[in-house]
Length: 307
Image (tube, rainbow, N blue to C red; front, side, top):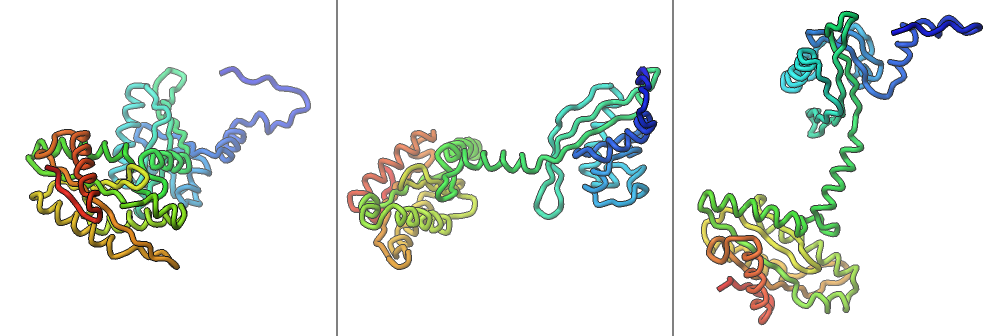
């Protein structure tokens, strides 16, 4: 690279490349680092030291990612970096998540380029890493909003059908039974008209919680409409197991919903369909559970197995 021309009346410090280089390294908001062919840290920015909680450069110089982050993460980055230096092909904007050991992850976006000397030989690499935890959180929040009901935080119709399709595929492979419980609140419009929509929302939230308490952790409870809930029970032994859960749900909700200072009478009607007895697709099972639910509505506060 050609040298910059010397201008008159300019302090000599502006032509001190080492000084300018270090100033650039120390003021960047991203972590910048240079590594040799053994993937050891040779030069690095203050940001990288701060992120690692290291105050003295001597404690970081010569270290590898295996020493800093452990064998699992470190070995993966070592293989990537060796590939860059062997092939000369950079990686750009690679997103990685590193476990912090407290149930959280540190998300980063990294770009790495090979370093070449005057002869064109690769002698190391330069890396630039940016933390993207806030961006990842926004992405996760948007994903949650797209797949969950805002009021109850239960899976919505989209996520329910995705899980149903996967459950049906597993049931087909292993010869298992699964059940769909279609749950509808009796006279919910009258409840809203009597007590107001705010109270109606509280009732929906409480019913969502009660449904989760009455099923297994492996089961899915979803809200697919105003007052319509679905329970997906995977890998059950027989239809009696689904009937028992439906009976428990009906009896539990019939005991009452307590929303201080009122205690409205709330009941539900439940329809049950089974794979493969009543259908082999998500749409078939949903339609037949819905049909059984409407037959349960004749008496209300009851459940019906599709026939």
